[in-house]
Every structure is written in C-alpha cells, then in structure tokens.
Image (cartoon, rainbow, N blue to C red; front, side):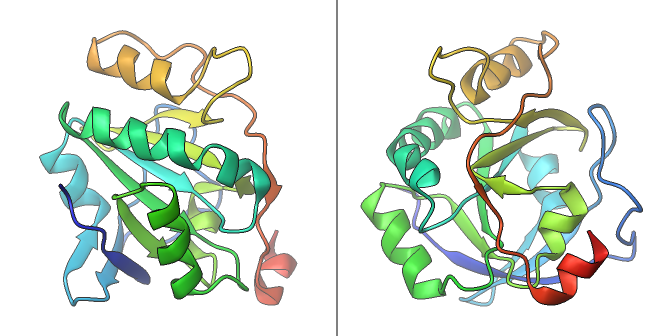
Length: 192
C-alpha cells in the first residue's frame, strides 16, 4: 500500500510560468514541490518514471470533489498498477493541511497531495475548479483536461486513461470540469 504523503508547492523550475495554460498536446511546464517529509516531487521525474501522470485539483469542502472522492481513491489504486501516478492539488487558500489529510483518509486516497496555497500550479495549468483532472503522458504532454466522472459515465477520466494506455487518441481530450470554483488568493484574482 502506497503511503500517503503531503507536499507543499515549493517553486517553479527555470522554465517559468507560461503566459497561458498548456493546450492539449502541449508540453506541460515542470513544477517542483517539497514533501513535508523532505522528499522532492517533480513533474518531470514523475512523467519519466510513469506511463502518465494525473494532476487532480481537489477541495476538502466542495460537495462535488467529495462526491467523487472515493471514486478517485479507487481509480488511483487501479491505475497505479498500470504505471499511472496521481497527484492531488489543493489550491484553495482557506483549506488547511490537516483538513487535506483528514479528507484524503476519509476517501481512501493514497496519492500524493500538494498544498498550492498561492495557486501557482492552478495558474500554471489554468485550473479554475475542483475536481478537475489533467492527464500528462510519459513525454510530458497534456492529453486530457476535464471532469472526473460524468453522470452519463462518458467521457471521463477513466476513459481518457484507458485510451492513453491503449495507444489511442483521447477523445474528447477536453471536457468542461464541473465543480466548485477555486478560492484564489487575493493577489491571484488580479492576474486572472
């Protein structure tokens, strides 16, 4: 069983923050975060050692993120064996690390969590709500962006992962994420 560890967003690499978020097919700029236990998490390292990386924007208080919480925990457990790395990101300024830990445990989420309090990562990827998923392939390219699970069960994150693992294009590669708006820090509101 993979142990849950928390990471706080540390700093962007020398690549810099793009003027606009990556589009489907674009290379996603690297980010680096320091785990609370002192280990380093890097998107570049994750894509080099996994078939794909899923970056999930989550919230402890959003009813939609909580509704899909157990689904995401099970999905990560299923796809971890297939070489997929999940990283949960919380960019809401008012949610605490303690709340993140409690929420992840309640939903059986064992994937890494990032505390993005200044919304650097949300700004970099263009995330505006939770839950919202970003699938980045082994070459560091964005292949899917959107909702986690639709009421119609299609298209969604699972289908995007299955297509990617089977060498097929993800279609549609972008869906409108449905959830709660990210509570941006005041400085970030001016830049949006």
